[in-house]
Structure formats: C-alpha cells, structure tokens
Length: 288
Image (tube, rainbow, N blue to C red; front, top):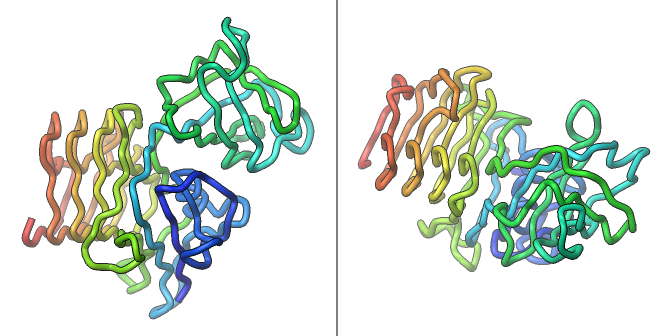
C-alpha cells in the first residue's frame, strides 16, 4: 500500500509525503503536488488491489491562497530560471512597493505548453483578492522579476492520474483527525469566496473521497470540467455547502456528467443552486 500524508494547516514545503511527521505534504500547495507529482511528490496513482494509493489529509486548507499565474516568459530551463520553493512577492509595476500586497512560495512550475506558468501558495494572511496582475511578480530568491499576463484561483485540480472503482483499484483521499486517525473527523477545503471550485476533476475517474468538507467556492464544491464525463467516484461522509453554484455539479460551462457515483452519509446544503445537480446520472445515495 502506498500511503501518503498531508497537513493542510502547515505552509507549503517540497516533501515526499511519506510519513506524518517531517516528510508530510503541507498546505494546499502540497496537496496539489500530491495530485500531480511535482517536486519530491509522487503522483497518486492506481496500483494493484489491495495496494491502492491512500492520501490522508488533516486540518483546513485555504484554497484562496493557491494562485495560478501566467508569466510573460519561461520560468525555468531558460528565461527566469525559477525553482520550486522560491520566495516570490508582488512587484511594484502597478504602484506601491514590492511585497506590499502579497508574498508567497512557488509550489509548481514547468506546466503549460510555453513553460511560462507557475502555481504559488500565498503566505498566510493573503488571498487571491490581494493579487493585482498589473503589479507583476518579483522572485526574491533569484533576484529577478516578470510580468503577470493572467492569474486565477482554480481550486484543487485533479487532472493527472485516475483510479478505477470498476476494477477495484480506486485512489483514496481520506480526512483524519489531528492524530492522523480516521475517526470521521473531516479535513476541510475552504474556497474562501475566491476558488472557482473547491475540487475540480478533468476527465479522471475512480476517486474515493472520505471525510472531506468543501465550501465557499464561487462555483461548485465538487466539480468536473467539459473535457469528458467522469465515472465511478465514491463520496463517504463528505459535506459541500455555501457554494455559489452546486454542492456537486459541473464546472462553469461544462455540459458533462458525473456517472455512477456513490454517496454515503453525505450532506449538501446552503448552496445557491442545487445540492446534487441533474448532471449526476445513475448515482446511488445512502443515508444522505
């Protein structure tokens, strides 16, 4: 069994997630690294039964601190030569002083066809509302800077590997208590009124989410993109609430479906639109 750990209450550092102490993934940046396998992380993947990958989460992750930025030049391997863990802050192209709006850490780079996009975990106390693209970005570790062509707060993106409920090899993401024990305590992903969705998957099947609460997205709590319909997700003891669209629903602009999901002991409430959207087909709900 490949078992990994992520402490959402801590700030991002580049770890391998192999234990629940010094090597645990940390922050929302570490959680995204666990999904994609960036830096020292190993991407969650489907392995042979009974050796499914399990990621244990504890604490609360503020998704408004996880900001995607499109930079005006290559960020590594040429151009700016930035690296994971570099400290960055707002530049002063739009006025004011460098670092007066936000500071943060690069937790992903080298994605996008032009090698010009990064993911930044903002330091505690800052959120996406503090980011002004016109200011640009300064890398204080490398002592250079770039322009920000665009930025977004997308939430947690599941877009790398997938499991398979049908063949008995899903990928598990399980919330645990402060002592890393599965007693029903929920780990939380807070959109903080900035994340487009709390969790959004792009054509990836076969995940099991247990003891996870998502809330306050500008879109849906759990969402899927327009790439393709997704199959056979399982949700156990999960909550999705206070989102501006649905508790479970397609991302904005998506016409695709969630097929054959299973919900056990889940709650969806105080969402502006639906709890469970009509784009969920052939699903089974028990004790919800």
